[in-house]
Length: 193
Image 1 (tube, rainbow, N blue to C red):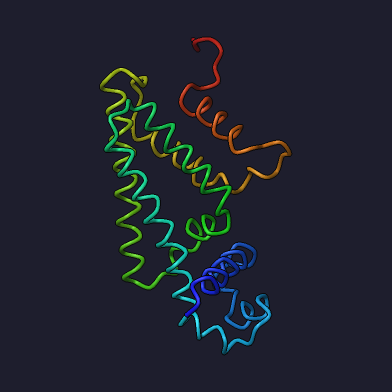
Image 2: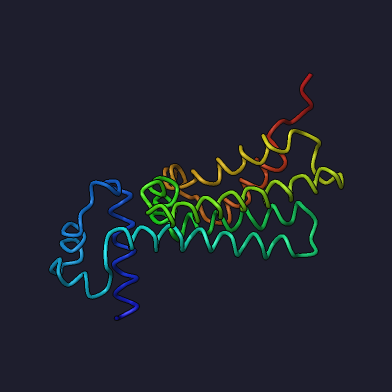
């Protein structure tokens, strides 16, 4: 099997899943987009379900490896949060369709893959929350409800693909800097009464 061809198939499928939704895309649609016969797809991939699993689980494992690595670093919580925000931005801009697919289509995974995906997502959220709680305990972050902060921050990061390309001039660095400033430092100029 040609690994490059398999990756090309997976990439094209992620684009189609983003445009049409997982359930609306057939193997025939995918083959047509690739300019090959549907039967030729099966030389590289066994099913649409395998493609979805490759997309979703590949990204979920990538996020898991990254947060585990960041959590192990001897950095303060703010530096860890900055690294996590940067990874989300990089992934969103480099793998937009795959990220959207992971966020929207994971529910169509086969039961075993869906269970594993949810385990990875829950572990990621728990590690993210632990970094936030550590920052609050150590006085790096304001004492607020850590759950609300964690989930609202993750919601912004997970849905970045919806809006990042709607404005011209949004470079990776500008988005990273803006999200760090807004999510970690806030936008209020003076204390609210």
